[in-house]
Amino acid sequence: MIAIIDYNAGNIKSVANALERLGCSYTLTSDPEVIRKAEKVILPGVGAASEAMADLEAKGLIPVIRSLRQPVLGICVGLQVLCRDSEEGDVRCIGIFDSHVRRFQPSAEAKVPHMGWNAIGNCDSKLLKGIDGGSFVYFVHSYYPTLCPDTIATCRHGREMFSAALKYENFYGTQFHPEKSGSIGEHILRNFISL
Amino acid sequence: MVAKRIIPCLDVKDGQVVKGINFLGLKEVGDAVEMGRKYSEDGADELVYLDISATHEGRRTFVSLVERISSVINIPFTVGGGISSLSDAARLLDAGADKISINSAAIANPELIGEIASHYGSQFVVVAIDAKKLDGRWTATTHGGRVPTDRELFEWAREAQERGAGEILFTSMDHDGTKAGYPCDVYASLCDSLSIPVIASGGAGNIGHIADVLTLGKADAALAASIFHYNEIPIPVLKQELVGRGINVRL
Image (cartoon, rainbow over all chains, first blue to last red; front, side, top):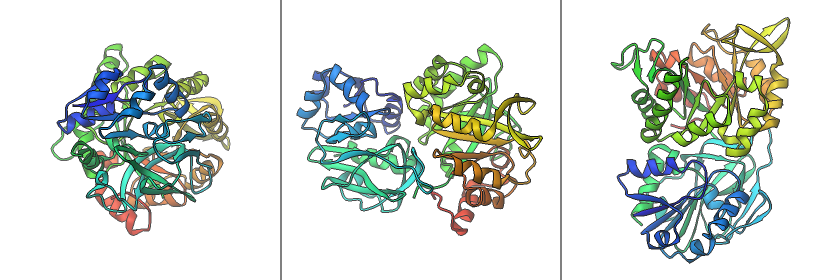
């Protein structure tokens, strides 16, 4: 059973639907006991990192997330709250990944939000097993996690190279949306399920 | 770099795709979910579903259709048509839509853009603008181009961006349906004046037109309906051709 953490994070339904398409059982929950006992945990998220942090705090979930030892996957803002801090609302985050979340500077060749399909490279993790460099995945974000020793895949938007995916011990994160990334995304979710 | 996107648009009435549809065994009226799935398998980068139902009942059917689309389709999709309040947008988000598109409601009530964006993020809000050239001025229109407004295209797009729109979907009503190509110079100026992505819509008759609007017109995405529905330009052929012309698309 996978626990999808439910904390007003916007469209968590797409993540649930994606697991359903893969025939994987899941539960939407904000109950610390259910989350601790789950085989795996997904932390979804859209919107602002500062609001996501406030919602997680209000539900008392931050120490729960920190204490998890099973595989955890943060998606988009769910990844960002696992970083050290975010410029979005200037907020200190949970600090699992050694990465900072910064705002993209718009330019002629790099519009903000970074929206659409972009290629990832330097894929190096069980989570991305079977995914070739140059594979396209779907991104929607205005803030990005910097490169760091936890980076397991990179992506470029304009002049900025950033972490497309991160891993630290049992924690994984994708800045892109595997649940919206067609068959490549399904492959990555399947990898996560079988970790 | 982020790839240029190809987006089929499906008009839906009472849960069914309308406009003559004639490909791969689908009849005049197609099943919205099946068509979406087929397009996504063919390599469409996103889908847009526009609800053209005029009735309350039709709108309710659309929400349940959005739920079915969301459970089947594994690429992003935008829904539009008849969204005039935050609660309309919320209903569609809850049903699983990735983005909503607002058009005349945004012109009537520009604050709606910021209201939806502040609740659900800019990435959720596409502002669609149907404009035509009147007395040398690109004028936003409503009612399928029939009713001009006092909004000028460039100013309105800029205001929409400042109010929190995440993308602009611009259709030239002078080119829509002509299959004679897009006004690439207008798109290029619009793209240069904005920092958010622009989707080009209306006017494509061949692959060259789409290539032009994505290069000369600097558009981030091209949206079309009939050329895909009638299979005049199959998406895999289009994408191969675009790659051959050096355009970055997802294969």
